[in-house]
Image (cartoon, rainbow, N blue to C red; front, side, top):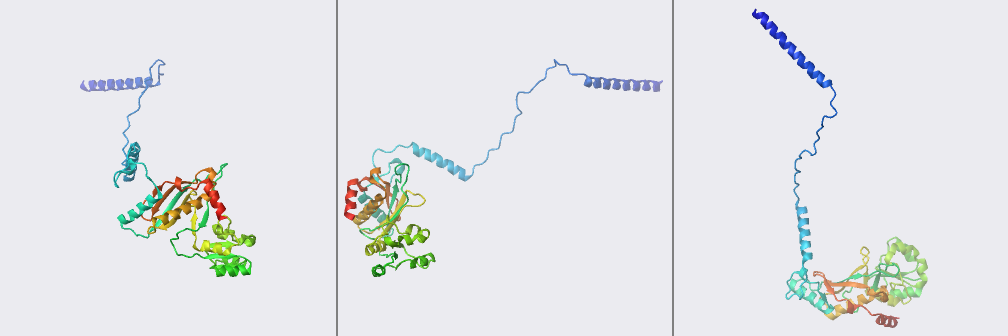
Length: 325
């Protein structure tokens, strides 16, 4: 009797499992009602916050520098001049000096800093190279005679002339080389090196092969290296002082004009001669050619000069040209 009851219980359990699995299968096959709402999520899953990158020392330094610059820009200039030699430059407008005062300060700096007393004195000029109709002054170079030379160096000068008597005159007046077309091949072969090259007008057409070789040293009328007065040209180029516009910046000219141990009036005189020569390369009617001028020594900062009194006037320049011609 007990065995029959256990057998009936097993059959009932098996039937119950079968009916439940069938109902689940039919539910999967039945279509989803159209009116059944579909829920959508209107928010994104939370993401992990990005790790903050540590700034390196260079980035920190650049940010601090920017902050300092912004602070400096916010400062306003003081109304009065500094009362002492030690002051914050950013609080005062840059001082402008007369030439005599600037030279005096450079000599004073040398004494206070215990630097070399015979160091060089330099003039830095910023030029307005613009001309009419969007044209520009080409970078130039010239040789001038300073009233108070600061060096005893004699430059090597080569003279081009086909005249035998002129060759003799050139040699007697200190030419390093003198000759005609026979010098061309020697120069191209690097057998001859000179600081300057001058020529008489008659031989210029035969010197064309040297243009690429000599470049800026090629004889030109604008540089006073073409003429018939050979002794005068030799005197200028042997002892003269060369000035040249910087090729990269194109509107900047830097030149040594004296040594710091020279008297102040001699330094001022050399400075004036340089500015006068520079201003000849652009018409005075177009306005000031020299926009800004700094005077400095080899070991000092640049002192901004008051440039207006140094610039030649149009009437004075015409008179000076008449006297030179």
